[in-house]
Picture: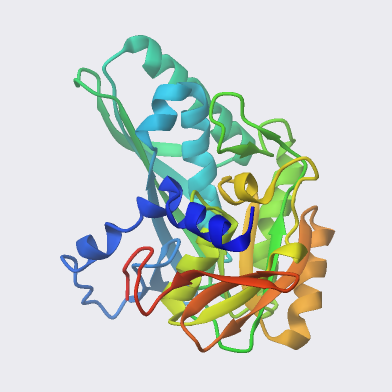
Length: 320
């Protein structure tokens, strides 16, 4: 597949296109508080709390995932929330959930998955709300975390000239129930996973990165696109440098939620050190490109180039 075709496929990927409605919603929620350091467009809101900050995030589980595998959906509800806190350079404290269900059997499956996630990542659910008799099923989880004030990693602060570094776990498999999930966590022990998650906290506390996000449903390039959109910048990425499972083609890999992965930007003289932190914590890592002032994300392979996103003309989330 040539790069133009790859770019077109990814622009139409549902993991990316379903983000476009966000920008229109955000305008209804003006933020007017001196305590709020960062809000929309970040993986978690950042709230001033003295020498530390509180991190607050929430994720709703996609109905397609809930229908495909309710137990996996429950587990992923914990997984994605823990990642939102880790991506900010923080550590999770506790979660609450809102659970609506039309079937007792589905409820049991979801609760079993939630319990597995709680035990795996050692983050408790301490409250929430339960609808036992709705004509639909839905699962939403919110999480509270903390971070050192000077160590928070935002996604809106990438600078032209920065290097782009990814850290991702390639030791996994396509989940049998949901083909766009690369499962790297369900079979690993807690110590391994917490060490991987802690890579972002180390990067933040050592001041090695300028911006970062966890790789989520839009995939590696889609997540980078959201970071660039928030930072009002662009980038050139060399696809030949991207860490990738040997037996997966690039298009399918770019549509994967990888389970454990981050994309960050860093000053060029710190990029190799950032990659070393990821590798030391069990993630494959590489410097894959650089941030530009031109507001478009370009992908390259050999002599071929294509524009994946032109932020002067299109949006991913529409958050400004």
